[in-house]
Image (cartoon, rainbow, N blue to C red; front, top):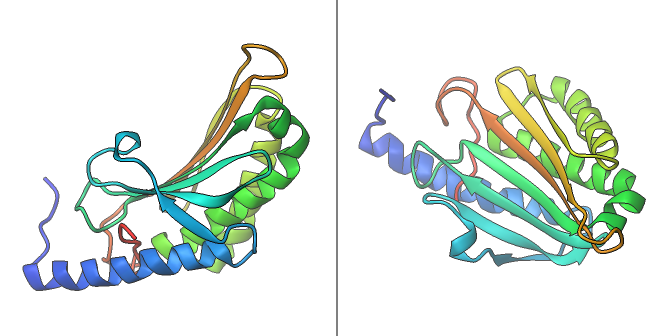
Amino acid sequence: MKPLLAPGLALLLAAQAEAAGNDYLKLVYEGGVFQGVKDLPADRLMKGERGYLLTPNAYGGEWSVVLGSAAANTLTSKVHLSFAGNVKALDTGAPTIGKLMARLSVTAARSCFSMGTERLSALKSWVEESVKTGAGSDLNTERSFGPLRLQLLTKRTVELAANGLAEVDVLLSRSGTPGAGGWTQVCGRG
């Protein structure tokens, strides 16, 4: 059974999470690639999740971020980053897509999961290399960085070689209770 938060603490954490979620989205814009967001349609989300399409599309595909939680509607215990494009875009742009996915992952690790700076370089390198490796074939790999777990998936569907679809997904989740112990920063639903 999950521990219940006192009502006052739950409200405080919800307010902090909402601000952190908005801060996370602002940090996504820092690199200049994305300038805004559009809400993801509800049929692409599960209960308790809030999702955004990052605009404009970049590097031959659609980018999205989903903030979700199993614990409460307002606290994020997972972040799902996604790139969906065509196979050619992933084949030719894997190094750039990997760098951008790594930047988004590092930002989420820092902003939503309170990851210390000592692990960020290793996380960044792992995401970049995994995307490059997964550009040539399907990949499902994971790694833990302390209490933070990352799973990286690449999937290619080849209907016609030139028109096949490719997807890269990075799922970040952290063990523990949001807002407790060393997990002081959480992202809200945005």
